[in-house]
Image: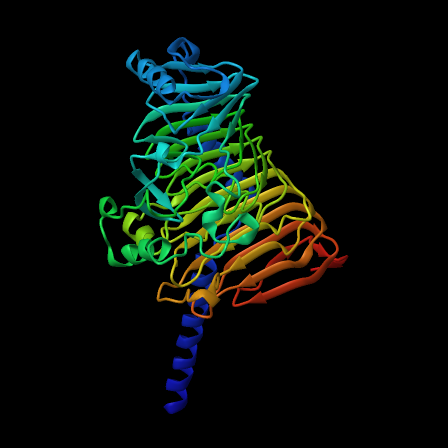
Length: 474
């Protein structure tokens, strides 16, 4: 009798085990390149690119002078206001050098720089007051105005073949970072002083209302360069950005963003090229990034602010871009508390001895968040310094970055990738024991000349299909 009961129990356990096996297999997403890129193409079809009425508002007709010294803030403001009031059109900046304070865009305005036009932003910090609702490293606050700013507007554009020169340097904005290489000298104010970043981060932890997080004059937090905040249908096309105080392009809480044919050459501190944050349906194409920080960094808020806002960044497509200097080519994090999903990267070139990583995901247990469904294909990498793919859930651990929010990372596919000089690591993955990185796949990947092919911790076994590293097939 006991034998019969034991036999029935064994059979039941076998059936349960098989069912569990099937459920685990069913729960694992098959990384289908064809399905993913069909989804990406559908996202592209649905992104709205703004169009504008055929009206032109020439800033010189409003008194703007291209002499490199006159402050043209009022002329630009009037031209933008008239364009908006008329129902939209183009605000034209002809060739020449124009000094101005911040440019605030309004709905249905295309701010267009003719070839040979250069905007020289004022180096008088008082010009960037009064304070506006903005963000600093993933935390909202009231601070100096971004150099180009739009708040809750729709159908806006910055276009043309001209140059936006932020004129940040070691004596203007950059020294606030607190590093000698950027002009800081002992005793000067810096962003890490107690009244600056520590105060802002404490406000974030304590849930202080954004309108009460006041900084600006008397504080040392740098403004972003181009920041559409809460905007719908945004286009940045053809222009060049250089000498940024901080992040270069920062669409935050935006929907339908197109960045096309833009050049970013800016090597200051935290000079990320493009940082979509809490944003959806973003298309970055035909751009050149040569930066002092990440070329593209997809973000979604820091710690409590990200969890308060709770808007993931999603449906982001990067294609036909060139990445040169930078901490990473396409990066997710580190301000990522609301999560990132549906990121597609194709037909890009990355190559520089000063490019640290090609694809990077960075978070920790204070940030938490998630990253899922990242598809990379047809990537040509000449040289990277540290890693081709780096996933790090211990980012900043030596700066007290441990908390209770365990990040999740899953569904990462690299396909048709060729790397000539892979740097220190081919793959460098540091997951968490409580939440291992899941479902990483390399298909048709060739990595040459890397010191350590794989360093993988707390990650499901990586799937390799037709992949070689240093000539060895995996």
